[in-house]
Length: 43
Image 1: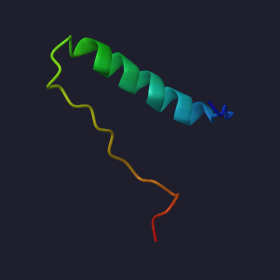
Image 2 (image 1 turned 90 degrees about the vertical axis):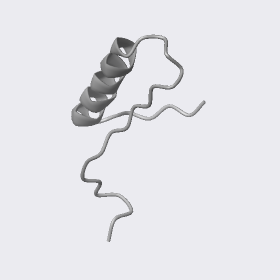
Image 3 (image 1 turned 90 degrees about the horizontal axis):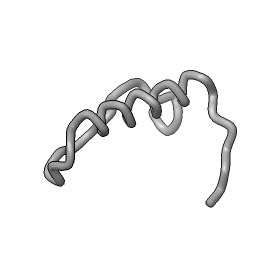
Image 4 (image 1 turned 30 degrees about the vertical axis):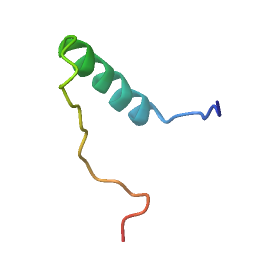
């Protein structure tokens, strides 16, 4: 596994997504998606 140093803002997004996913319970049909502006790869 490759380890990268994340920016604080990236770490906050990941932590928020993990909290949301944990709150969804054990239903395997739950889907979590984060939509936002991405400066990487967008024209």
